[in-house]
Length: 320
Length: 236
Ligand SMILES: Nc1ncnc2c1ncn2[C@@H]1O[C@H](COP(=O)(O)OP(=O)(O)O)[C@@H](O)[C@H]1O
Ligand SMILES: [Mg+2]
Image 1 (tube, each protein chain N blue to C red):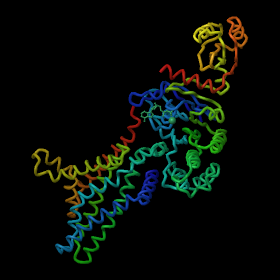
Image 2 (image 1 turned 90 degrees about the horizontal axis):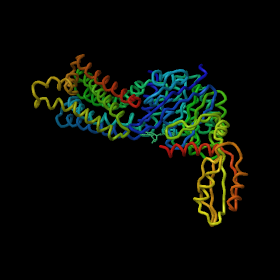
Image 3 (image 1 turned 180 degrees about the vertical axis):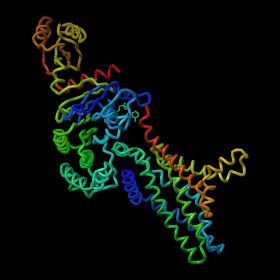
Image 4 (image 1 turned 60 degrees about the vertical axis):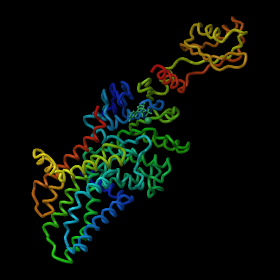
């Protein structure tokens, strides 16, 4: 088994004239749980559809378990378990029948399939609904059935598209727990547009926005990468306009960006972004004193993954 | 081939769990029964001719109704993505769906064996045309079915799939009727393409390999196009 389970090189995918994925390159090592994070329409599902051989890339290459998704799609699919977005299972089968069908499609021998269905069904908590029609399951159970189907043949790689969307908080915790457990032995890629999702389950995060990869690293690395901390100021400026104060603040050394935000009556509020690591609170206080402003509030926020995500994805959207 | 059989088994169950199989069954048996028993009682003739004569037209309508859902429904519901990302070649998916449709058709045709038995009870049955007729019905149905599966890969809308399949099947049926009105030059081509000209010979009890080859090649060509159409999602 190769150390790099997934290799994606300059992957581009067009739907007609729409560029859904734009020159994306990344690798996934064995045993990683990779979170694919991005707003809706970012291109997460499309990338996954290429990796699972449902769609072919318009340009670029993707290899899974050492096999090319286009030239060797059958081998690729043998190494994959896939849970598509919205879990489209056959509604007219019972859970047990569905799993038996999936096992037969994967060519599993009948004694092994019976054993695995029992084992995975137990792990996914499906025993009590084994005889129920898939169409009558709650969203949480349907998701678990989809997950069980993906894990049935003990694949090396699991690709899960929004595995927790539409679930209630308890179900989310259960599914995350399950994914975490699976991630101990398997390579997992999961997509989500919810940040806490990746923080809770993933060892590595890819952030994708408008089809482009904008960040790649562990949660800590990403936080460190985004050094700029943010300051919130509320200033009473003795009649000076917000524009004037903003210009003055923006010219302070070490400030990369200053934005006017909604303030209070008689006071102006600003968001400041620092270019570097150093603490600007003293400088800002002195600037206020020098200009005879009254500083009503001064607050420094360390970069959270949330701001990293928001900065990366909104900046890209403005550009395109 | 195992995966194709697994798919066929699942599809057959779905047919009999849904009203469509029973609706098709009823329509088919009513129409065919009317024709058969009509000739039996009115013309006082115990023979299968009138039943078989109707088949090229009736199947051109019934078979597309059986086949329309086979792929289109899964395209619409999204389950096709789940199905074709399993480690199974696309052609097996197509063959599995085709076999399921053929199984339902075989049940329909099997039920009409009653007519043959009726004839046997009231008078002498001409074996050759009877066997040839039933075989011809299955072959012709197979050609229509493969066209239906192909049409079902073109769209996510079952009605559209039905209309496409019916249009093609009905044209193939019409060719034979149009023969007297067509120029000498293309007459052999139309006659060869017509489903009915081949069926006619078989249902008279004359089993000619050329007719069988015609039906089999219809099936192969349509199913190959269906497979390519399923793979077209991967065209760049
Ligand atoms: N079948 C399709 N045909 C045309 N455009 C599509 C299709 N699927 C997705 N898109 C477009 O491609 C972009 C990426 O979509 P998708 O990969 O589904 O994003 P995500 O999963 O990140 O929400 C979106 O702009 C979407 O509208
Ligand atoms: Mg998506």
